[in-house]
Length: 366
View 1 (tube, helix red, strand yellow):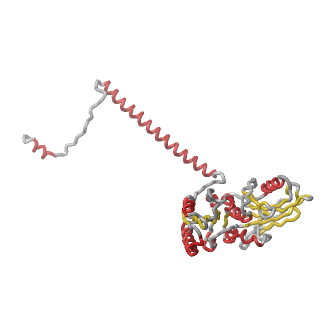
View 2 (cartoon, one colour; view 1 turned 60 degrees about the vertical axis):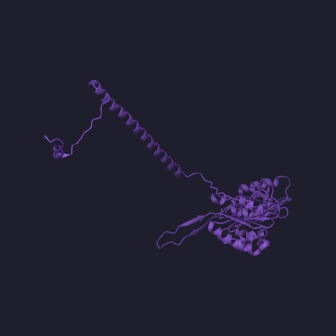
View 3 (cartoon, helix red, strand yellow; view 1 turned 120 degrees about the vertical axis):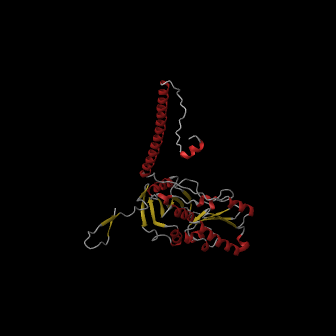
């Protein structure tokens, strides 16, 4: 393993400190099964060796690293390309960009699998997108890719959570394999977007999903960071579609918080309205890490305090009852022993504040 050293400028008289930084592990291993790597390219920023035709779209998606290698074992050979992205959202967008329309593969491999160009297979595993092409027979290629998935870097926290927007596309009446997710204007245009990318707000972190209905219409879902940004771009989109007139087809637009749902193209008006009325934003909260020990400690302290308060209140009430019985019963016993009734008439104390003049008026003899 190669280590790189770096020194930071310090004030005069201070001792210099050296930090050793380990480079990231290679994206591709030296061997896959019995196949050995015969050529490789792996760069840190992910842009140096990327095909020029794909570089713009992959940069929009947050590409961070890139590796391409050739593997061979006698007559058996193939190539593997790995793209590592900043988060799972970028990986989903890149996967949708690479896969050919209508060729999603039901065979399980990673998180998503589809066919690419020619004999190529494309699949996504977390924040990684893999394109592979091998001339292997039987199920051996799948076993090699399963081995590769174990080698790929894993994401933790929010970076590993797949985007929610593609899950909002209804299944009824829609072509599920036409769903395309995009994070930038080039990716949106390349995956079949029908709106001018300039009004969608990609510069404000917009996310877009495009899907086709079986009748030929287009559903577009847009998710923005805030409802205010969604409202602003919703009005801009509405103005553009108004300018297009009848060529835009059946236009139905609805905003729900930061979400915009829009239909264009060949739709029956009633069906389009029902479709977008049935799309609702679902907020999902998930934890991918154990609750920290501090939380458990504070929870135990709170429980212990409330439990102690409840016990103290119970003991106080019990003590009040016991003391009431003791003193009340003792007084009644003493009265019985004196030959009096256990129950006593209430005795009242009266203070006469009327004075002598009032008394003389009431009794003239005085």
